[in-house]
Length: 199
Image (cartoon, rainbow, N blue to C red; front, side):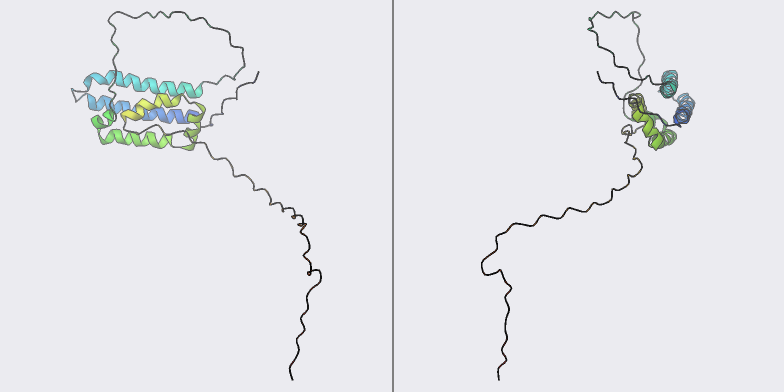
């Protein structure tokens, strides 16, 4: 039974990255409260959006600070499908944020664009790329935020370039063996030319 590969190690600056991410969302939440209070069209979104931004920051912080358990190979036992019963309150309506692309950017203008640029720069840093590679689930967490801020997509976690490998010394090629070609008749001896001077 083969063990799965160990999880990749997170960068040492992961807590700092989570703190910077939370500061960006806190500034964005303050902007939402300040601007949406003056706009009756978006006034009902203040509390849901404020709570969603705070939960997103806390979820990323928990994902960074939570230790990853080492994989253990365990035999898979046959499972029996059982019906799942979920207790839901009658007439419970869940409030959903708008799903249009860049809706928050259009509602807040250039101030939201500034927070979007800060977020995009943070996600493009090499340490953040390593963090995204070590926690693949963070992409699903960041995707709605990037969409509402008009970002095309979450920057893909690029494989960080390691230290350049030392070039191997060039090994001389072994000499080719001589071809066993038959000797043509008449060419066994070198041919000499004699020049005669006239007069």
